[in-house]
Image (cartoon, rainbow, N blue to C red; front, side, top):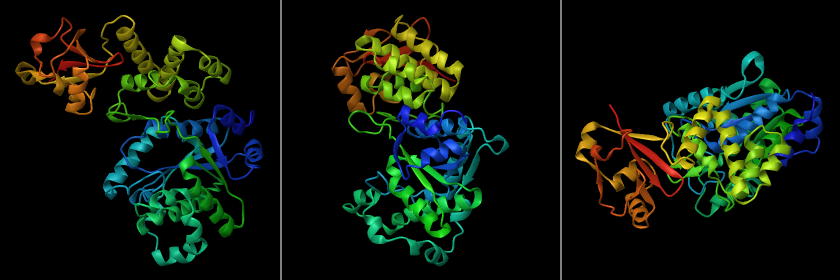
Length: 410
């Protein structure tokens, strides 16, 4: 192994906390099997997951073996960490479908060939557990007093924490033990909100197997106000191109806060840190060049170079040349709908440029909407196919940076 991956992760800003100082030495000397869990709460990974995926890629490149653990079992409970309310209970069929979609997406980033990585699903051992046996083997090692001091539970105590969710820490700890027994997994990684659960797993292995296990938590990607990054007015930023188009994905990173550019370049790209620091130091209007590099590099990793180039070209066509691009987001209506006409509020909500009709009305009233380059001031204005330009589309624009093409579909 060449450069220690611990140093790479630290320099790039990934590491939040570790359980043992000797973890760095271990990662420099041995091939370590580690795991990261992904609860299958949706049918696509998000921009938030992508940071942990990048950490896995760095680890695999350095010769370590990742286990991507799909939470087919734990998703049936729901992790209370960072949540103010209990998660919705999902059906087994939905969870299984979501887990399969995660598998497809993770395979784009992690090589599972020749035992280089392992894909597991904790449903295989959690769903058939005998409850009494589980309590006798695992529950006896957990102090309720200690569990109640964990941050993930403290946040929920005021609103009420169900016994249903209280079991989650035991299940996640048992996952670590099971992977340790099956594959010699000695390291669990996850977001910094997983610290308490990761500690519980490492402690369980120490008690049951009389050997060391390690934990490493990763920086959470947040905006400057502390809110998790990867959310927009219309919802999460997904890695699935059907849910968030490559163009919208590119635009999300192109429009992030100036103060977050260097951090995101370090965490979400493979650019050398010298270049990351150079781009991060750019000031005023120059920082936009760094944002373009960030958006291009992240989109290239997630959607491929061709889609990244198309997204970049689409952005430049609109913002530099003032023209619409074929790569811009598109919303289609039927011929009958367009002949009958659609009011501007409907267009803004359907294209997700605005979250509600009241939000759309406010935006129009404040002069923030244009169609084909002309400002719309009447929120009752109706558009039909007769309003289309020579490219047979309407270019709907909100503010300076958000837009969508409206076209006739089949």
